[in-house]
Image (cartoon, rainbow, N blue to C red; front, side, top):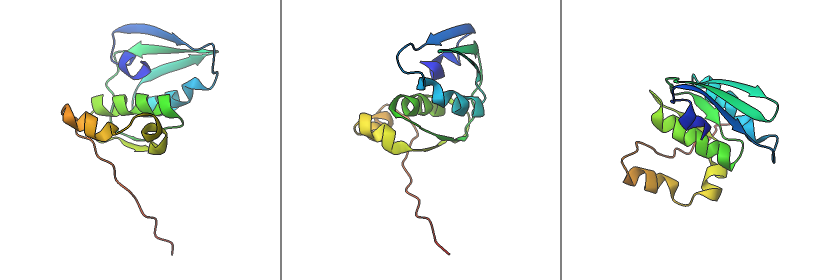
Length: 114
């Protein structure tokens, strides 16, 4: 919801009274150009923001989903690290999104140790 609200006109408020660390992804959305402010157990979103591609990290399942949505709506390329969180909760997400026209792919990186 936070990624979608970044594109909405005006100010929005998302509150979470259950899990205080739910908004870890807000800094990642800010990196993409979103205008967010954290206040206690709430995120204030001011829009519309034109999101741009960036390298971001998914810290949990819901954060990952938000970053996928943000990446799909952003200008440019978004690279998401921590995709294991996303894949744990959304089976065949890449194939499903490709099926509705998304330009998305999974790239496996192998680090070279020198």
